[in-house]
Length: 142
Length: 198
Image (tube, rainbow over all chains, first blue to last red; front, side, top):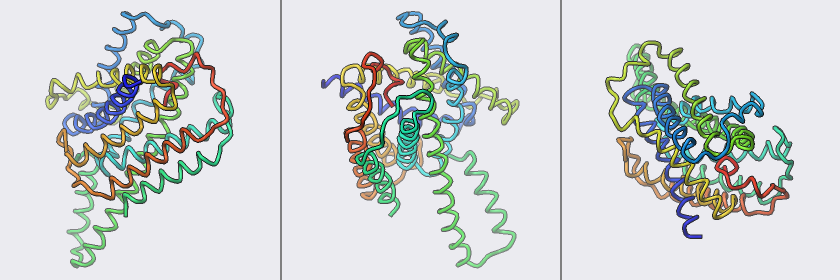
């Protein structure tokens, strides 16, 4: 249990660290270049781990719809937008707005059952949660 | 810090000096500029979030057939190709002008691999709802920390109680959102994966 919390916590720290590191690197070599470099090393490392643990099957991509396979390419615009946002409004505002939009879009997709997701009803707690989060950003802007 | 923003600032500066505005008009303009910048940044961040949501769902579809590490490899490979293409289109030859590159930049990509390991293990041990809530909380907490410490050469934003209060409210919202009853049935065998998580 504690170990799980620790992993989840570290994971979150690393996500933020990744954004900040990308912003830092972008200053020196440019934002698209930063996205290129970091994803290249990440790719090489993930490939090594894949060969090492051999879970799953890289050849399985033939069974996946091309649209879904292309999702990885979003990484380029995600990094570019995140880095530019961090440089413009700081880390806290960026991460807050990013998370809210992320939860909203996920929720929208789940509500309508797009992309083959199981449909789920939007309940009062989710609306209250989103309202609280947006309220939080407004408080920061006071 | 000074990519797009810097160019833009300079551009505005050029306009300002050419029409020689009064001090008052200058201040008003600056305030307006501050507002526009905030809006611009928020829209970009929200766009990134929307793309993350889409990508997570697409990755999740890939994950079903390929497993966590093959998917991670695929996603980062695609991201690399797309970034390289954008870099060539928008930066041209400057893409390979890496003389400012420091050695650690090359290794920062490993952070992303660390993210996948942590998320997979977190979800495996805690289940997605609790694990994701902890991850989101930690993301926001570290964002505040990075801003107020100015680590990694970021422009230091002085610590501000409003920001802390805002983060606390957002975190409360996350827990209400995640733990408030949602009518949804997920096949349990697919949950122990990073791409299911966020």
